[in-house]
Each structure stands twice: as structure tokens, then as C-alpha cells.
Image 1 (cartoon, rainbow, N blue to C red):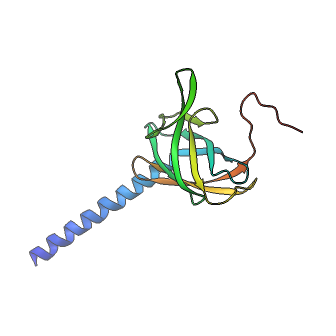
Image 2 (spheres, rainbow, N blue to C red):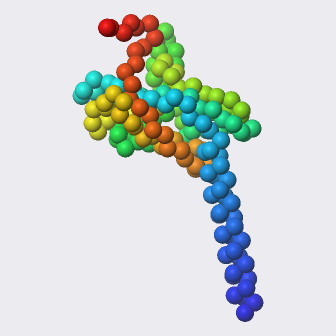
Image 3 (cartoon, rainbow, N blue to C red):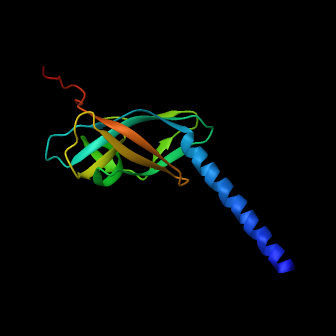
Length: 158
């Protein structure tokens, strides 16, 4: 009888622990607001695109995105541009930091999310689902419309 009660108490304690851990984990993802997400439209046959957005952290703790995924591509990577030997080069990064009570902007020429091995041609205004995974294991799914964008300094043809 004593063993049965002890086992029940242990199971109840573990249940509370995992429930609170799950709730805390979900709260961390909800600390981060996603503003103006979009994916770059690319010509038919192009198998690589990028996603851009602004991340705002409403908490007093720094958060990190450590992974991303999307059903529209085989691989999704976190990237940055770096100036190296007089050239701008793209590099994969392990994480993207969102400072406490601050924001991080993912934009052309800076931090961004690479969509590699696109399964189909992306169409203007199509919604692309992207799952962002945070360091604590929580995640947030965003819907990013496909937009035609130009690099800085380029003129749009009429």
C-alpha cells in the first residue's frame, strides 16, 4: 500500500513538472512577435529563396531561434551576410538572437532564413508556412506571403 502511494505521488509530481515545463516552453515562443514576414519570389526553376521578417521580444530574457523548417523546401537554414576579403558572403549561423525587450530584423543583405531545394515554384501572394524553433524547444508557425522584392539600389521596371 505504501509503495503504491509513493508511486502515485512520484507520478503526480512528474505530471506537474512536465505540464509546467510544457506551459513555460509555450510561453517563451509567445514572448516573440513576428512582424511583416515575407518570402522572396524567384524565377521558375530557381530552387532557393529566402524569408525575411522582424522579431520583437516582449520579455526580459534574450531568446534564440535555433532552427526553422518549411514544407515548401527540402532544407531550411538560418543565415547571415558577412563582409570577408572585400566580398559579401552568405554564411549559415547556429542561431538568431532576439534581445530582451528588443527586436531583430531579418532583411536582404543581413540575417535571413534560407529555403533550399524548393519543391515547386513560389507564386506571388502564396502563403508559405515556416516553423521557427526556439532554443528552449518551443516553436511558432508563421505564414509568410511571397513577394517580389528588389535588392537595395535596384530600380523596379514598369
